[in-house]
Image (cartoon, rainbow, N blue to C red; front, side, top):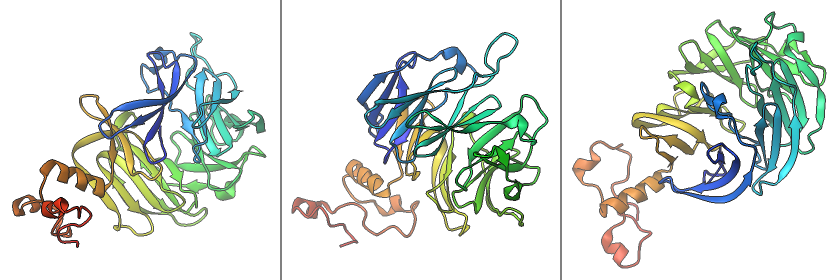
Length: 360
């Protein structure tokens, strides 16, 4: 989990994941531990066919929720890593051998409220005190699926006091009132059969959807009204969740880091976005809220930070070359770049390091 502008990370460390660490990392992958606390070790056998769950962090980056046991969550204060409270959820369903068939999932609703999903049960908690805020919702009792156990996903819904549920194999978004534990059918969204998953932006005006073929699209949506695709499709999405996607802030802009590109696409202004393209596919592990800093892993399993900062790239290029680009070197670059990119060495010698050829 990247924090702030990407200068810090929160991650489990140690061979058995028995520590939680706040770490700084530079663009070369060099790490420095800023703070470290002990936590219960993790049973690595659980990770044989899936990646371990991430530590969840609220938007204000003041609290982190960490799954420390089969159905136990520890909330830590940031950046001190002080223990705030522990939350015990309902026990997970088990198979005939007595092994849990899934893991508890954790979501921050806002800075001080948590949702947990344990089997078919959804619970709503105060993240500061560990107290329950509303009665348990059992998805089997909502009348939206006949399967037992039900397979479903939970995501934030843009109306306060609600959560979103989608049943596996159904293209319908159900808005459920956390206080009454009932669906508000007037808020229901029904997509076409090709849609497997949908996440609304905070205004409820747009939805990022995952379709068959593992593609991503953005749709303009309104309950009870005509819905249409406005962006995409993009993809296919990297396997094992090695991509990052989210709506930025409260607006219609989608950030998608996947494969060989990072895109910033505006659903309110299709075709007006920006993209960064790479020579080969990337695997993205984490990103900052603004999408401008990403944690990635290369083919040699080396992890580093990627900062989408043209000014930083320019300075790095100039440090390496020690001169401006030649005409041949500029032929493959965008025409809108200024004539001079790197500082004029003669001006630098005079102390005028802030002036650039062609920009003075």
